[in-house]
Length: 162
Image (cartoon, rainbow, N blue to C red):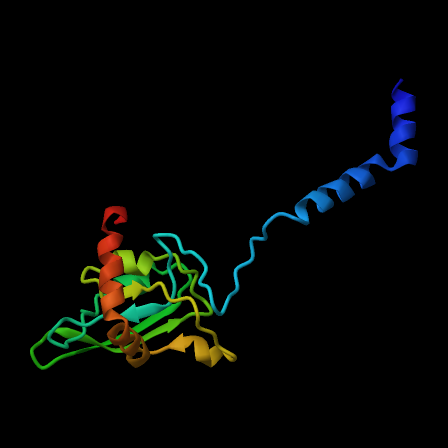
């Protein structure tokens, strides 16, 4: 009986016919295609995208130069240099994030005591050269200024996950 079954499977090409039948059934079902420029892909509630630095409502940058984000970054993608202000507090003179090294783990955002560095939900960015993916302090602050309303809203929505 076993030999007869093996003979029929081999010579009648039952596996091939079952694969063709599956293809034929799927041919008439609706497709799961997303038309990328017109439609956005759905994001999870904790999606982590492009980095940004935030400011206080009075315009001062939030970063207090504690260097916790640089210390906690497992990919060593963050570089910070600090200096003292006239009033004795610290400030960053250099805050660079190399997005080609970053693994978007979100540890920098979690370690920041003043919510200065955040990961936005922006995923549509690219770089043609390595230098295009090295974001400086001014670039990060500009992103934070431009998307501040969206960042604040996302931080409120993510509050239960923090």
